[in-house]
Length: 311
Ligand SMILES: [Zn+2]
Image 1 (spheres, helix red, strand yellow):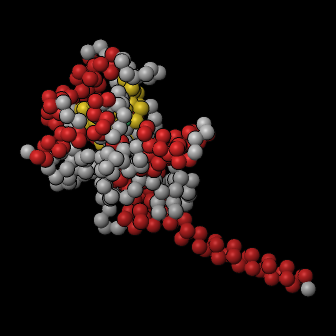
Image 2: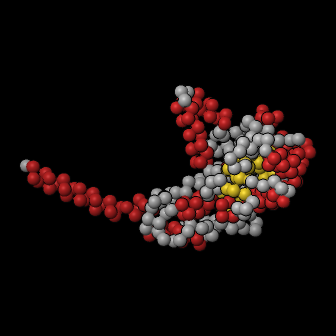
Image 3: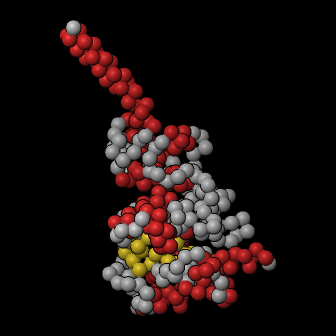
């Protein structure tokens, strides 16, 4: 009795393996991600290159550069920037409506409203569903390293904001204030979620209940979707190895950032309105005209937008 049973089991197992070997390409096409290999990956890399993104060599190996290029593609096409090629991403990627890396002449920037105001993202105004990025760059590759150190690899931001940042930091350097670092710029919603999770975990390890840990974390970390960093137009500007507040770099920015189109976004005085504690290092690019007006009126962004809309 035993032997035929064994045979049956073996045959069944072989059948399963056989079926799997056929279904694998279909399965892989739905879930291409870091570590994937093969023709489907190569095809993906070729298509990303064709659209103006930079996935590295089209070698069929899904590495970091491919993941980042795919994230940029997703950001340009209103998909969540997971860096994983799921069915939705693949459908758009190979479809006729796929948006390339280069913005078109008539394209509207997502980080500016129809009225030409900076788009508000805060706890009451999450990043709109299907938000479309305009012209992202990888700061490590794009920025002059003799002017600024980019703390983390693959930090991305909108080109216009990075260009303004570089003009500002070069002016600071010319004035004798150097040693700049960018600790954070653009951030995906998934990145924000892991930031939140790791903060909650730290509190739980320190003895707080899950609920209390979540409340405590939400005071320091914005809810995923509600961080202004999602826009790619803000920078955490710091000095390597130093607490930023009170440094000469901090003082220089407070006096000069407005002239370059930047605002200090979260101050102690406006905490009630912004919903965020003061952050000495967090600057947002809004353009020179808005920045100077906000400085003159002593408005935070929430106040400024309300005031402008009432005009
Ligand atoms: Zn920040």
